[in-house]
Every structure is written in structure tokens, then in C-alpha cells.
Length: 123
Image 1 (cartoon, one colour):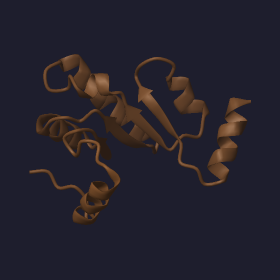
Image 2 (cartoon, rainbow, N blue to C red):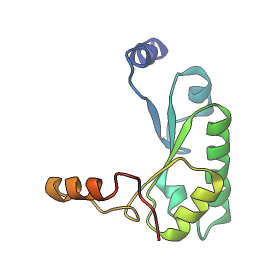
Image 3 (tube, rainbow, N blue to C red):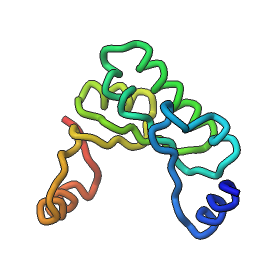
Image 4 (cartoon, rainbow, N blue to C red):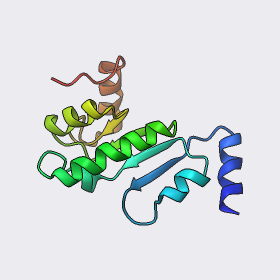
């Protein structure tokens, strides 16, 4: 039943993500059985990636697994250049978090998007 609903969304052009992968309900069987486009690496791993070898191994493994399945990977909770650098080294596709930008009001967001239309280049 769930697979049918998700498949209908994909047919209609929706991009579907597994959020918080590695924690809670998200499982390998979902990656195998459901037509997702993207995996989001949970911030609990990303925020510890610089100091915890197990978090680093899990993040790297999720990125590799997702890419091998043809999925895009977003890392949640990227707050430092060090975390960004590690994730970039592992081939993570997208990063989100305070390192890139804190939440912005609409007017400031529009300006930020114009300033970064070629993408965010970190120092």
C-alpha cells in the first residue's frame, strides 16, 4: 500500500527523500523496496563527524550506499568547515546547516540567493 502511494508521487514528478537516515524508522528495506530519490544523513552523525570515528564511518557508509543505489545524499546539520570538508571528501551531494546559512527572513533570503546563484563556495 505505502509503496503504491510513493510510486504514484514519483510518477507525478515528486522528489522523495528518506529523512534522518540511520536513526528511527528508516531502514535498508525502504531503500530497496521504495522509489526514493534521496537519502538525508541524520544530523546526529554529521554533528559528530569531526570527533567520532564511528559517526564518520556511518556517514561515509550511508553516502557510498546511497550513491551505489543511484540516490542523491544530503547531510543535515553541517555547522563547521571541518564537517563540510569531510562530507565533501566522501562525495556528499548537498549540505544543509548553519555553516551555509542560519535561518533568514524572506527579504534577506532573496538577497542571499541572488548573491549565491552560482552555488555556495566555502572559504
